[in-house]
Image 1 (cartoon, rainbow, N blue to C red):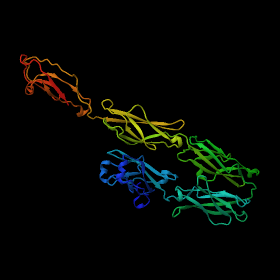
Image 2: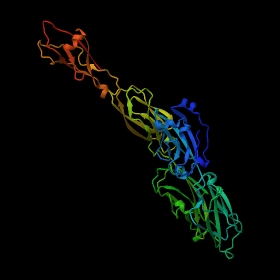
Image 3: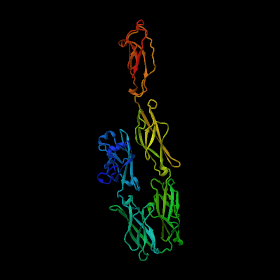
Image 4: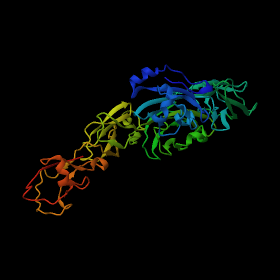
Length: 533
């Protein structure tokens, strides 16, 4: 559903519900509107006509106040046409890293009536990053006694793009002694191996200068190069040998810096200096998170790890003996998730004032929960604390609607403090709570009530005309004009024409006045019926 990207021609068009059908599914669509656009679109670019895809006409826009509710301001909605516009830089690599699918999910909100819609904008990769080597040059020492078919792992290049735009292969400058083999790690990343084709003779040639090129699969492809200097050393009968070609280890993300990851082992059958082994990383960039003891082969953490940032590391180590011969091994470190992120409750839209005659099931707020952890550690449930006339309904994954679930009475409870607790499924679980205050607005739902059902008034005869002879009082618990009471006389056992000449009542105060002097021998008692409103 939806369309987008304007003249870019990248956006994928999906089937759109016709407006007369769309209205049948309001106020909420279970399936999100989907758009697909390229990264790095200019600010103001049109993603798609959001209003049209939601079945809203241009005439409705001023009253419906269509907008997006998002934590990060990547998009806005134009007030004139209802277009979904790009409002900030969309760098796919910065937003999603190496994820195969990069989608920004948020809610569109329309008012009068209040509706919420899920929107999903997929950000497509463009080839805007060339492969890059961590170093400008590498030095490789190979003994002249090394036999053909010996292999040497070279430094890898890294490409921030994904898919065909990412690094695809390596090429080696033409030469007679070496060839290049493209290899692939478990995570799918490519690395080069240098293979010796024919024996080396130090007396004939002491060094070789090679150029290694990394290329991606973009159209056109991007590339970068690094220089390799091969130094031929005197014969050293035995090279170092690692106890394993591949080491694998799992490490919880909450270990402290300085924690031992593992210790690699290498041996050399030579004696003396030729048997002395030194360990090192093959690439300088691998030392940012880990330290390596060059003598013992012990690898330790240098900085804190974060599963949510990097889930695994692949490191190539080198063991070099005193004669210059080397061996290599690969260490793969899998970062294990721990429950170290507290779930959050984020309100996407909130109505903080509610009429007390609001019907059951009326939308009050749309909220979502977020937990950066994975698996059970990132699975979150929400609940309302205490007894309140509201309930939470699941709207979609990690999104909830707060709706009314009971009768509201401002005169009894003028406001509610609603606390929502989000709890994950970690062991032990983590939770957080958010409290909002909802104010109940008055409606005229209470009739005034007299303080007494009957009043007995004694008046002496020959009273002065205009004197106050009694006061009635009624109260109304409503607010403002809804609670203001007025009084009037509606009935009496006196004749209607005579009544006004005997008494009157103040409409505002309820004070009853004698309009004339009373004569006990002519009129001993009479009754009045008053009303208020």
